[in-house]
Image (cartoon, rainbow, N blue to C red; front, side):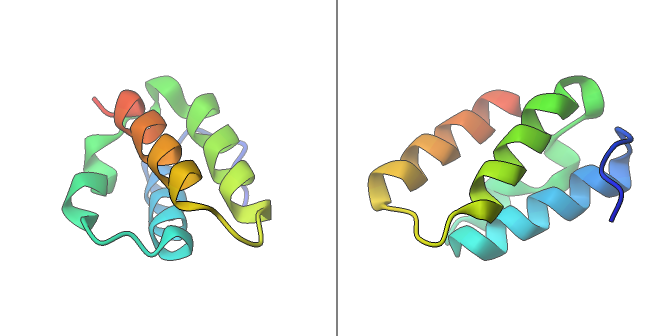
Length: 73
């Protein structure tokens, strides 16, 4: 998938992949429509960081969730 363009489809793809990787329980808080392309580069950074990790500690998961929360509309 080409994530170089800030499209709604790319935002949706990345959010869904992050939710899958983190096995998030409260998926309603991570609805793709809650994010816009304004902070796209930050979202790409978070996506790449999460995807390259083999394991994520509970503290890291909290930090990631907090950061994603700050990227929401």
